[in-house]
Image (cartoon, rainbow, N blue to C red):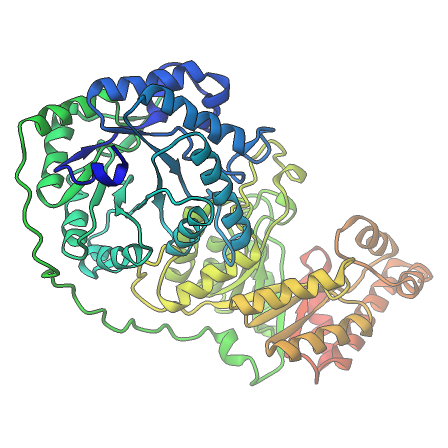
Amino acid sequence: MSFVQALQQDVLLGDGANGTCLAAMGFKNQPYDLANILAPELVRAVHAQYFDAGADFVETNTYAANRFRLEGLNVDPKAINLAGAKLAREAAGSRLVLGAIGPAGKPLEPIGHIRAEEWFKAVAEQAEALAEGGVDGIMLETFIDMEELTLAVNAVKSVTDLPIVVSKAYIEDGEMLAEGLPVRTAKDMADLHVVALGANCIVGPQRMLDLVRQIAETTELPIIAFPTPGLPQLVKGQIIYDQRPEYFAKATMRLVEEGAKIVGGCCGTTPDHIREIRKLVGKGVKTKARTGLSITTKERAPLPETEPSELAQKIGQKFITAVELDVPRGLNLDKLLASCKAMKIAGADVINISDGARARLRCNPAAVCSLIQRQVGIETTMHFACRDRNLLAMQADLLGCHAVGVRNILAVTGDPANIGDYPSATSVFDIDAIGLIRILNRFNEGIDLAGYSVGVKCGFTICAAYNPMAQDQELEDDRLRRKVEAGATVVYTQPVFEMSGADRTVKICNELGVAGLLGLLPLRSERHAEFMHNEVPGIEIPDWLRKKIADAPDDASALAIGVEEASNLARAVKSGVQGIYLMPPFGSAKIAAAVMQALN
């Protein structure tokens, strides 16, 4: 019997989680797909247990077996998928097997680094191996991004005619249900011409009920519902689910009553859960007739807009002076606040606060920026690094910044953790600065990365970093173009020491239609100049300036030269850029004030 023929049954029962069972059997490697080649007997046993429990089909142990999730593990994705399909096929005999394919595990462009064509190729590679291994269909599951899912469907179709089931993961969110997101995405999934569609993972069977109801009133296609057994908890380093199989089975049968035809379990479910469902299926179940779309979804009210930041309002109206000041170690911020006050008196428009530059431990920059704005009354630009936060924390922190009034964000990828105070700390880097800018731009549209409303159209002024003296200038220019395409409107440059870098900044900023703030770093001594030139990546100080500083009779004279050269450069470009970005050595407000005074 084919999978399409099996869909004619009242209920088609699938399996539960492979990884949960493998972990219980002692397989600890991640991802669990590695068991296909490292412990095939365990994988075969898991499939057999699900069939013994009453499953009509099982999924291959290949959910995470794409080249991106397997990167760096020195394994062949094709071998993992082919082995996974053959193991399931051996356990199934004449029964059904679906080849499992999950999302990339990392965001695609324009948020992340993975190009669409790379993802297409990776899915095609998986699907081809699964088909070769003898699966009866392909199940694309736990997708969040519809564009990623659409690419995956097309990739599968490019290599096989096997039937395709698609399943999206939905967060537990009443607003999402009220605004009809399941209705819209179900229609999108149906447009992919698949044989079945639905939802899996994240929520338990009771929370999945409303999802199935909305999907059932949207499509005539068979609906799949694979919930988790409640919410997970972390116990002794292990993620566990504490829900009785009997309860899970009863709650899952309510999903069948509401229109789900294909049921099973996701993360945390075991053969015991499937066995209890089979018992109830055997007793028969009444399924509600589908009556067409009758649910009412509330109209999306226009989102309120946030007033632009002071920096955004000043751009084009005056010559901007931004000053970067260093955050000290520890919690004594009195000197920093005093320096900010001095900069405000001297005429600075905005204070820049870095986010763990050079991976050194400093007070949280959002808190520092908030203190400066409240206690000093001058606006800040917060550098926001991708190093320390995953996609969830990144978005949460950005919303927190907006809530406390920190609206100017300079998106930076960040320095690796292994160069800083805690070399053993983990660097995250889910995305880079371009992806971060995309997220900020989506917040300004009123939605998060998953497409859910954040309640208002945020008012972030999105700033990007640029080095006009980069070693690979073509790459640097291309990245700036992509940052602007992603939503950046203000450009902060690395320190510039001569007109060639300033001219390049003016040219590209004018070409892209963004405001440029030229970075200026007044040199204070020969030692300072040599350190910056030789030991700080991305900074190049011309020979003539280093010689001029070196020839100064003392450090005071060298500093005077540094201030003079920075001032001369600022005056020379005043009509070409929208402002300057002062980076005084050691956060010296006195040196910054000297350059600002020279501009008056």
